[in-house]
Length: 429
Image (cartoon, rainbow, N blue to C red; front, side, top):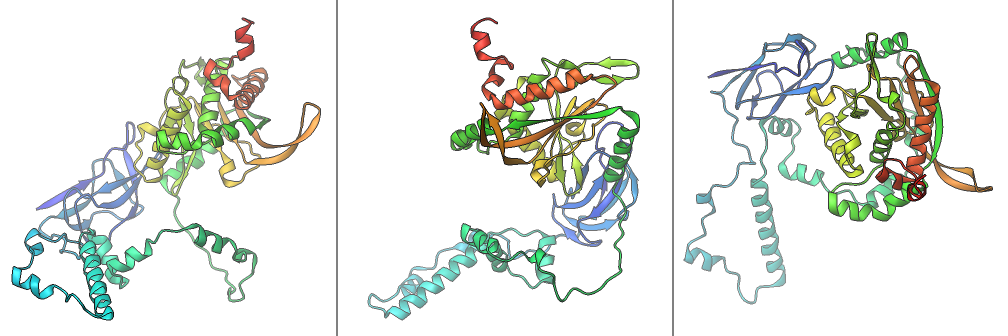
């Protein structure tokens, strides 16, 4: 039976995609649910999955533009994957030996030490082989193992846990990048590759922002002491309850949503000659993936807690990096946050993500001397930047918004009271 694998629709308004990369070879026999290809739209990278096991036959090449619904490949289900060494042992193969056979296997009461050791090694080896027999191997992985002369044991040994000792050993090595290699040969060669659909769309949008908006950037700096102390104090308890680490992005996302109560223009956008001001705050978080920058959207951040925002971000970032994210999860957004600090950036001017009108840029945290109550102290400081479209956001709102974010991060307890000063709230001021 021949099954057609068709190009799925990545989302509304998308009529064609680009076949980015085949993950198998033409003629390979694959298992059901194996990933066989990557397809790229101007918004996301998705994968094609084998609907049934069988032999793959390509109907398109890498780089081809395919219409949604067209056939990318076929699968001949009459060709089934060969049984691998990962096939589970059948119950009849696991029958216990007969009584007289068990008696022959019983070791003598006073066997020599070396004989006992040999029997133990044989037993351990049989247990290991039995464990390996339960390891399932896809046909693609089996082929790669055969080509590279690797066994299941080789793969399992390669997955040895990395400990502190190995990390410290690598850190103690001299910086290989700083030592010029004497074996590096002289070359004038060049590598060329076609830009992906996603990268082409991104480049066009970036140029359009520069040409179509009156973009300005304002800066400030934030003392991260309170948030860092809060994370350190409650991190273990947070992990125990939520099963993931508490980061900084949840605080900044919540702070941005609260600050928009005071400066709603930051959450506005132009639609022709109208200014649209949503009553919700959908924040896009820029995530770097192997295929380029993606911006998954966290909906209604104004109604979520810091922990809920962190959980949403964790799930969306994993989906984006694993090419499982949908176009709907990348579409929309009223505001964007990007964190160049993860790559060591000290200061930058982020570019607006249209049709939004503003973007917040976070940066690296460094200990710096600052004046505190007339004294010089060393504090963990972060520069922040707000790029905004000056056509609809005035300087007062842009600067005021960034100052409010600074106040909220330096006093995180205010996030519980929509940014209000607790003392002023107490005194009804």
